[in-house]
Length: 640
Image (spheres, rainbow, N blue to C red):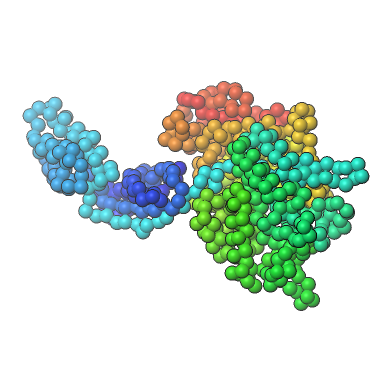
């Protein structure tokens, strides 16, 4: 559902109107009458669905609404017994003018001619006078809704709107390392890596939790030179796998493989394609990491040394993000050979498109030229308009937004560090209103690099709280494997998990946690089920924060008009979340019912989608949330 808006006004007191003309990618045109938001202002809006992918064109036509002006003036004057016959004569002439326009349907022209005759006919009785007065509001004038009668019009410039497939704006992501699934330690202490075949066995559980995108970190050969050991140590022990982001390393035939190869421990390209097909059978798309950097062993170092930065001492500059140092990674320098690098990146992306990948999570895109991304995304979209790029860009707001503006369909966000009620309300209001036209936030609750202090110290309830917020406040959200196990131990003094999976194998016993009842997998599945059943959660712009007496209670609504729901009824949800993972909290919550399409003071029934409980609610309501039992209410409005 897209709101098309414009400011339309003219001098004087005459009524004005606005029409939206919308042309689909295949050339089908529709016209919609716009409504004032709110009435009495100069802001106009039309809400509609755009259900074809591709480039839409639209323009707004403002006009002097002569019929509405006459209806308004005639109603006042005739009821006041002022200029009665003059008002009827003006209306009759307007109807005759409209009836003379051959572009109108013949049936409408005939009806308007009849109305003009009746308006001129003096009444012979009080009954006839009442009937004549009623003609001012005759349904015949509905003809002017999309074909207004006017002599003054003004058209806006034509604008464009890019519409992409649903997965570009709605999805539940699950990140995991294929090498950890099925990995095990041999008797001699060495490790056997998991493979694409063993990783595929994890897909059923991921599908059962309701995730529809599986994101894999880089699956390419990993360099040996300067390889990092456990917890980013510069001392590497034999058999340690290294960071997947140190792309480029040895292949079984003695050559070096890069971005178009898979790590031999994981299997072959054919094994990867089998993994992708199995995911598709379960309704899951595979997203692949696109990390434009290289290990010292990448073929690029030999074939294209000009793609890197050489320092005055003759060494190649490695990657840094102070205080972190990545001696195992060399960043690319796009200034040295922009055309050569661009051609190589296009080749790599097209290679993985052929393997069945249509979603790319792009690593650190803010460190590469914006112009390159804009050109790359446009080039790839020409091959396949359904390809999706997610920007992993924890950077300055302007640069993050610029990446979205040049074409990235999704973006990481600052959600991870927004924990208080005020911060959450500000954040969600901004991403749902100020930047919603061009940036779609993907609310990852954790990543291999990010284990927030809130999760470190909040226990199981903190994980449930963050999942609830991410899954219900915006259409895109994601988790990194281990979240459902509430892994909360950080490297001292950091927001990074200790024994980081980036540098080691990390097999997990999900079945044992499920059996013990300590896993959040069932709760994550419930959240994703609710997301699938309620289209209001698939919208970004319909977030509305409400007030609670206690700062630890965060209340917001997601409302979708019935015209856009499967059964034609409104989809209205009220989400109440405690932000205190340790203590039970009671509070009154105060709702602005206009956000749910109801008049203030209206009583209504709600059903808690997490428990099945039913309550009677209105503007002000009492809630109690004990995080040891329930961290949230997700309330569906069932009726008033």
